[in-house]
Length: 418
Image 1 (cartoon, rainbow, N blue to C red):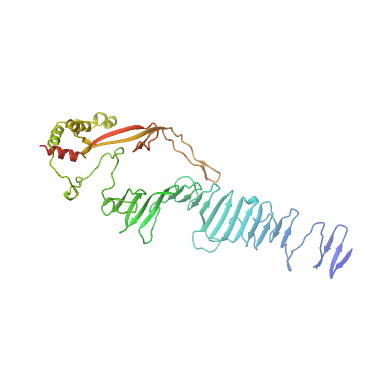
Image 2 (cartoon, one colour; image 1 turned 45 degrees about the horizontal axis):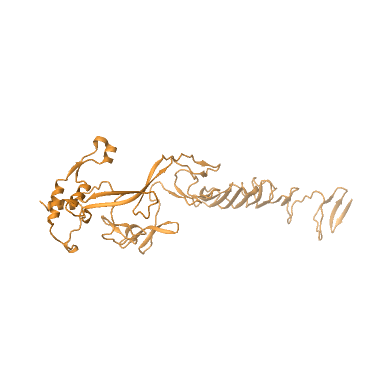
């Protein structure tokens, strides 16, 4: 049976209707069966849009065919392979350098190509950003990954591996940062024109020290309490926390944390300007007797620590025993502590047994990202903590006292009695 809708011929049957030409429908159109059209477009000669039984929509492409060569702009929504795909006519939405967007099922995979010079890709929670290695503006340009954000929150720039040591930068969500370069400077910090801090160190929110520059492009490093040093031409000078010279204020080492040997070409210069001194006098008779006694107190010995390390090869030293010097002063009714040649320092210390640490291998996920950092094995050891005053020492700390001698003053003292 045939009829017309407007001026268009319509073939009607019990199973459907065939419209041989165009049909204009001004009202609602209900189709209970399959609906096939050569195009929802003006004068289309091929399928322009497809709506299948699964609810998938393809514009310029049949749903599920996004991966086939395309010659026109395409949009696909709702396919089982992809949730959203856009292309301007590429051969593969996932790898093309032309403009396109592809988001797969559940957002597990995503590709956004904005031209030959850049590409974004998201796979299993890892985000990758690519750029071309040259200025080539066509699809033949070579694209290289420049930055990656892993599912573990690690940001990689110039590298793709989170483990090992390779050129590039690594920023972890837990605060760890790594910069690697094979040859040349790794990090450059610059202060434009004014003097001051270049790098500030903090513990929590409290500043504990800094590295900076002062007048004359001089570099200094200091803690917040003012103990620091300054590099000036050919010398190393004590400095304050602002890099200023700090004369006659800082010591090298401590009474319970000493340097071992000092290798110096020329002798050590000590202050001896009379303008800086007062109460200048000759040695008293009692002092002269102590000086004479000290001459006879000179001994030879070996350090216990050296014998433990070197055995019979430990070398012999000559000098005076600090306790003997103290006793010589006491024999004349004098206090050795009043004389700068004699030193006695007391501190408190604790011993803490630190257990061994077992090695732990690095754990990577399927993308090669570090899930668990490697841990190196460490043997058990005893840690000694020291405290300058009893007030700051914890309960149970052991009191220690060490005596010492300034030989430059002792020898001058002995010579004065000859």
